[in-house]
Amino acid sequence: MFHSEDGAWEIIDKAVEKYENHFNNIFPIYEYVKMTSGNGYDFSVLGAKRLSDFIDNQIKQDKPVAVPDDYEDRLY
Image (cartoon, rainbow, N blue to C red):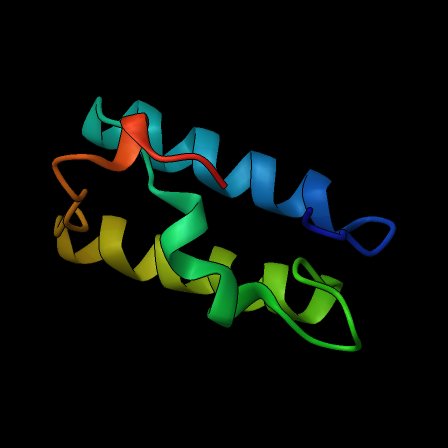
């Protein structure tokens, strides 16, 4: 089970939506849990901001991230 700090998921959701609208493809959020973790949470506010910056950079460079072939079939 994943734990989210208050306010983190709203930042992540907005960034992921921006990514998915730009690239017209899913963003594999669970591949980036190491980036979003901190303060004892899987999804911390600071980590959410790191992810948001990362996504903005990917969009700026027009470089979508790799999505593992089995990503949507995995259980987390």
